[in-house]
Image (cartoon, rainbow, N blue to C red):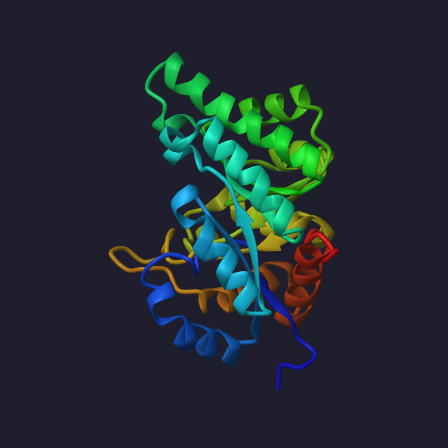
Length: 260
């Protein structure tokens, strides 16, 4: 039924509970919805190993490893060296989820620590020629400034985008795809609905961020919601969800490094 349709979740934490605890069932359920590729980001050294193992065990899973700004306390020279070694041994892995979250930075010291961690990983990604997955909360300008300062040109994904069309164009200018996700399923999220309606599809990927960012309160997000995201975009654009699925999936697969 779905042989000619691809749905790819460009940001799904299959490496985290409860999804990793019932992974076979999750993959069966998502397969029934036509979801057949997942880009799975790590957040800190503690989950790098499981993330890479999943990518080795399941052909539909691709890995990204990095230090998320919430876990900046795990950043040090040893962790950076370990990350470099893992990237060398896993040539298809992206770097992520990295970035800046100034909602979690309470002073200049906190901000600078996040920036140092982010830019060290950008430099590593630049050396390894890997795209990155970027978390950017209250920090879009700062993220773009770091990208310019590092002269980073490998692109990647601006994850969980919620900004304006002008901000989207700024990311695109630097080679990034725009991650349209579960926020779209909240009717009050007007900015992302406008992005979903008007942004050229060649610049868009879709994501759930499951089990996080649930569109419903007090519930875990589900990877199956990716189908609803594609259908919502299609409705906003007066198109077909299958076309949204195929184009955004192609966009994801284009940034996965080739197996050497």
